[in-house]
Length: 187
Length: 287
Ligand code: SF4
Ligand code: SF4
Image (tube, rainbow over all chains, first blue to last red; front, side, top):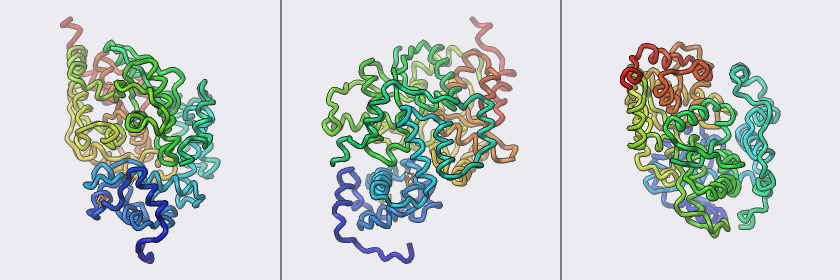
């Protein structure tokens, strides 16, 4: 944060308009800090939750899209629930992540993004999340092979890990949802 | 009572034993469940966190199938509940945006604990248990998604919810007063950043221990597996098992906690069976 000058960024109407459309009124923030105080992950963030809101109000899109905070956010909704000004902070985090992906900004926490990708890949393939497959997919992408081996073995012997995905019948409907042809993409 | 039932992926995967206890309890209480045919994943956090369209369309497909069945929808998973509720809210507020204008106005989405803590059902549980789980001190752990955002979940006492406390009391156990009822377990971050999960779960378990709890009770499959699995890595003797509310009800109604069920926990969970063993039977003699 220290070496970033914060001043309202010009020409960012598109970004601010996007937030407005999703009902996120970042201008209403009076910097009370309740969002950061309640955020369970804030100590691992590079920007505090309050800073994310403030930078958004200034239109500092690039800085936000390349931050770790947007990927480490757990979508727990504590911040938005407690904000006295009713600012939809968790929706703001959603918008920032989606924008980062659409614009091809390299995620500052690549493994987190790889997990989301593996999870969604499983739904796209089968219509449901297939745990064994998506964890295997995640491990291939992230090369995090050793993490939680012991735990995985325990679950395997408990019979919790099904080795066969369940495929739903309406897979074509799911493919359509994922196809990028939804109305939202034209907006 | 007839309800549609949305199990969600966890309950058909690593939390299959949660599903079993839900089915058992509903059977014991004469709640008839019809699984939503060909349901799909609600998208969990990953979908809405990375794509608004996919995050909404996935749960909407389930709602539209459920609408044909016509009954209110029972959801045991907190994450699924929140996603279905979010989709419902968006459908009701702006149906034109989604081009779905025929979604019925009266269909309710019900999270399992609000059903089981409902006054009539809680009374039925109290009247029919074979064994009171006396001497068991439990920290009721809600986590995030059945409560927040209250605009989505419709929950009014989201900082101090009581449904799990009602359930724990109705089976004769004691809910402890503690600080971490609604703290986050780290959710899916546990896979990519286990260090963060370790910290959050460590704080939750420490708070429960400080409050004198023998275990935790939850209604979220993700909280259950996260809190137990991060303790699995600790060598401490202060492990606390995390039970599902429905496991407790089922055990109290049957007067036993099958060892097959107990073995599904990732840390020692023998306290429940121990309490049952020493508790006096209240039903057999009186019936
Ligand atoms: S809680 Fe709301 S008003 Fe307070 S700092 Fe955070 S965003 Fe701003
Ligand atoms: S939603 Fe994200 S930013 Fe808000 S409190 Fe939770 S983890 Fe922190």
